[in-house]
Amino acid sequence: MTLDCPLAGVTLAGPTQTPPKSNSCNVPSGDCNVEVTSDGFKRAKERVTVNQAVVTRDQYVFVYLHPESEVAVSGVRPVVTPNLLQEMDKSAEAIRKSKLADARKHLDKALRISPNNPDVLYLNGLLDMNQANLPEAERQFQRAVSIYPTHERSLLALGEVQVKLKELEPATQTMEKLLRQDSASWPAHLIAATAYAQSGNYPKAEQHAQRAVSLSGSNAATAKVLLGQILAARVIGRGQTGIPGSAAQLRQRRGRARSQGRSCQSRQE
Image: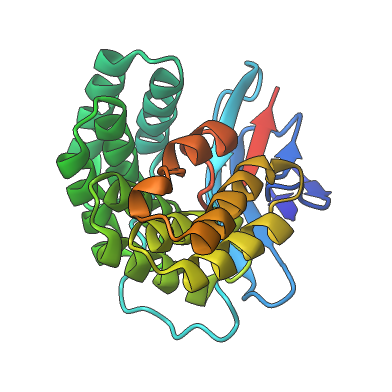
């Protein structure tokens, strides 16, 4: 990841972490260019305005990587203004702290600024999930991916909601779509395994569970438990009720709102 602030004469570069994230500190205020490269993916560039460089705060920049084989989509991501980014940051923080009324207030402002921004729609869906309004959450995630079909976090969350709603065939289709653009997404493999297992397709469930185990590293506990349940179900012939939904466990392990996507985080002090 490279962060270039030409007006300030600052260039920072470094590797990303796992999950894919990069932190930059002491970033001066002004316009900065973020460039991310990764094997097998197209070079990604984003432009961001850094505000309040003297004040310690986190400012997030989400950079989405697309496979080199991916066909370009017709939709163009809406421009993220400083005011919009501020409302998104505040809403995400309020959701993390379970201050859902505050989150709604900031998201309403964000929607007025950019009603078709997929990140704003994703956060709206996330808030609806936290309020147990799964049908509305599903609608928000579907809107996000209709505008930006490769929006990874929305695809992940959509699949999770569909599993919770027992919409198992749509859930598997959503995850297979995501895995075509990112075959190394262990959360997608885990959700796919859960959906296939609950629908009784144990061979496919086992395949995805094994991939989730191999790709998830230190987060493999949930995938291993699910794989064991799938293997046991295949042996003793239990029905789909013998496989509990693992989407909630997945949320606890990967945290909400992060994941769903490849991102860079700029920290300014």
